[in-house]
Image (cartoon, rainbow, N blue to C red; front, side, top):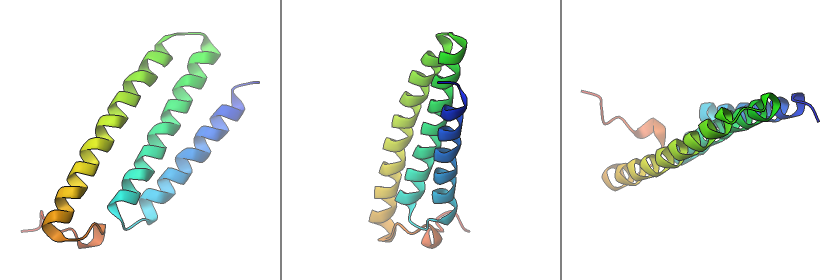
Length: 99
């Protein structure tokens, strides 16, 4: 199997994640969309690493998975904190930084 099916899968997953980020009003849904977009990047990295037979792509993939896990944990912690303060997780109602 060539490189094209993996790139098509990655583009599809990225578009689904982008659609989720752009249309969701719930901050947890936005975080899930960002996670899908990061997974699409990982699919690209693994596909190109396999296609070029270089181990650097796999190393970058493990690194980005670690970053994604950290981002998810911090994002959920921020959402929990915002829910405790504002009693909502809707992105439209969060205006903590306005003066």
